[in-house]
Amino acid sequence: QVQLVESGGGLVQAGGSLRLSCVGSGRTFSTNVMGWFRQAPGQEREFVAAITWSLAITHYADSVKGRFTISRDNAKNMVYLQEDSLKDEDTAVYYCAARLVGGLALRDDEYKYWGQGTQVTVSS
Image (cartoon, rainbow, N blue to C red; front, side, top):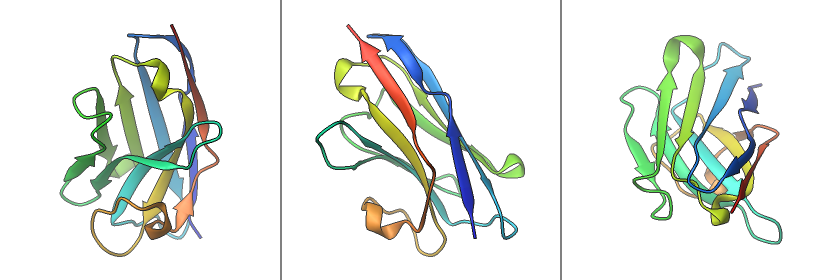
């Protein structure tokens, strides 16, 4: 079993920044891909960014490209999402997820383990 715990969410003004963190643990934590997803009220969960654990290959949703940066620290079992130039439409609950088998993936059903989520609220 893999446990994921997010932190770093909060209330921020439009144009501001936040850094989300996710720590993984359990079963000698090992993963192929870590992803960040988000879900706004009344909307489906959507892909934000993903990173491969070994080579740090990244992929971003078009809506966050150039504003968000995903990174990982293998030694600490941590993945981060640096969010800059935040907009109202970035308001959502943000989830990290782990994919143990396979390469970069954009669909949430391709990830097996999920954190509990952290709320990001952007005010204008």
